[in-house]
Image (tube, rainbow, N blue to C red; front, side):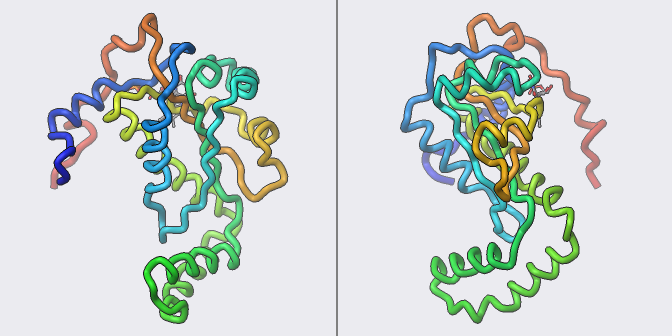
Length: 216
Ligand SMILES: Cc1cc2nc3c(=O)[nH]c(=O)nc-3n(C[C@H](O)[C@H](O)[C@H](O)COP(=O)(O)O)c2cc1C
């Protein structure tokens, strides 16, 4: 634990404080230093094999954000939030992509690329098994990033609304992903709750721990 770690009670308090914001305060934006840490949290997300099959699009431009509700089931959060994060996943994973990852690994860990040959075979074997369905796998990785982002935001006192209510192909078109190997999977509007968002005080709806946790 570092000196600045939360204690366990503070962690749970943060998780209880967070909720899926329905109404953001459009007048408030996240300061650049805090935002930089949230970006770091995204980049630090773990992924299967470490392959990081994602792109994180950060929409801050008011002009672009204004176009989002109409392609988000008419929800206002993407327009009124401070930063709209759109998590996009790789549609297919090429051998070149894997090799780029392995070259990065060899360079960061200062090991010869040849020493990673068994790992390479393992990854390529896995990818062969999911051929044609890579997006199912890569989307799961994006959701890990979403979870990490939301939890990180909560401990920093930043509000968020995870958003599956987005029309992926319209987002792809607007944000320049159409025709690329990435597609939008899920969004996360981030900023500060509006003082009048009644959902902030609504009791959380969760099953009892014993209904969802089995201790064996
Ligand atoms: C992957 C995911 C997608 C969601 N999509 C939306 C959405 O499009 N719009 C919305 O208002 N809430 C959305 N939610 C919020 C959930 O409804 C909410 O998290 C859930 O009801 C629990 O409430 P709480 O987050 O306030 O504790 C989404 C949540 C998740 C995890």
